[in-house]
Image 1 (cartoon, rainbow, N blue to C red):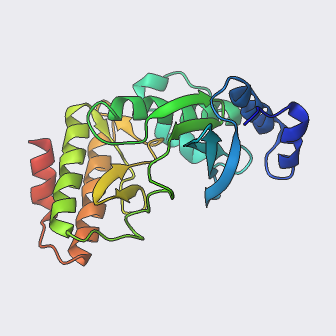
Image 2: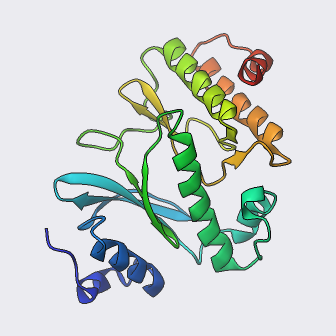
Length: 232
């Protein structure tokens, strides 16, 4: 499939702002993908699409600069030592937020299954496609056939992240994929290192969300025991 020209990208002018179209054009011209295919998720702050690169699919996550709550983003990212000195300016905060997700994915993929990040350009992040013909479903939409096994894998993933110095900080059934009965963590923009002043609070919240979900699946799991196991 040939790469798109600047004129061809203008079909998206009612979907994306001009800066986003230029970012997509840049990544397209660099050979990362041939063209957008179809939407996976359309959110208030980000839209997720599949894209083709030859016969392979990738994921294109596009943060909507004008819609993002950059004040909330700044509250999360400002205490992160990796982004010390970040000025509270909308585009700078949002671009740093996307860069943070890219960096967190690189770190996380060393220890657990996550979408491999491919490239980042301002508000656009390219990632590995997780799925076969269709994207793998979210855990909320596809409860595991063996909840106990899936829970143990999820708990082990949280622990491996913690050992690697990272806390997801927004973990729930809404950002775990169920890919052939294995958990794949996604949405790492808010993930933080352990030297963030709120990292332990974030970990407790992650554990609470996961325990609550699996209790609804019929498991008898204790939040405090899971938390101590992860930190042990």
